[in-house]
Amino acid sequence: GAGVSQSPSNKVTEKGKDVELRCDPISGHTALYWYRQSLGQGLEFLIYFQGNSAPDKSGLPSDRFSAERTGGSVSTLTIQRTQQEDSAVYLCASSLAQDPSYNEQFFGPGTRLTVL
Amino acid sequence: SQKIEQNSEALNIQEGKTATLTCNYTNYSPAYLQWYRQDPGRGPVFLLLIRENEKEKRKERLKVTFDTTLKQSLFHITASQPADSATYLCALVSGGYNKLIFGAGTRLAVHP
Image (cartoon, rainbow over all chains, first blue to last red):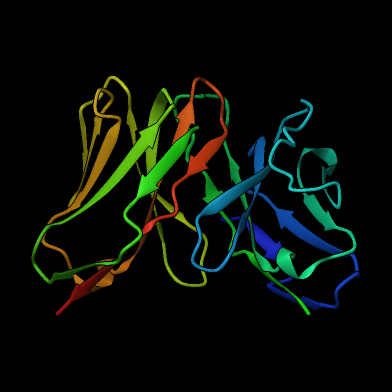
């Protein structure tokens, strides 16, 4: 059984360019999350998708960040006009959300983004 | 303001001893709390979940306690091994919502 996969594993870009990060959740998981982790820091929540509901975008740090989830499966996180402070590891997680009292999240390996 | 605090300093212990990690929170009323392990360059891996009506949860050499009065969870690893060396993150859910808020983690180093 495949876990959560993310691509690319590493991305180096120049300041001002746009980047797209991809997440393939575990099949059947209705909830999908994006987090950002800066060096030596904890996970910072970015955005949450649950089924067909409107996503919770409360963690997106600026309007340069956006995400979509097509067909309730694959998700893409887009960062426009990247800045050096966007450099971090971007982690995706998915979970079965039918039972809200048990919400184990399964994480992908992350995408390390470096903005030069 | 809402905060989750974990000891930012690394915890160094000798193999065979019990490691105890602390997670304190303020201005949350979590329905449950989770612990994850993260190895360098990897995503976090779920370890244990404890609900607000549970005082203690065990899994093999792991034990988690949850004191809603003290607003604290303790994570214990008994008979620690060098392979237990990693960063341990606590995370909580407030209410029935699925959004997890993570602490910054505590790095554990178990020395032979």
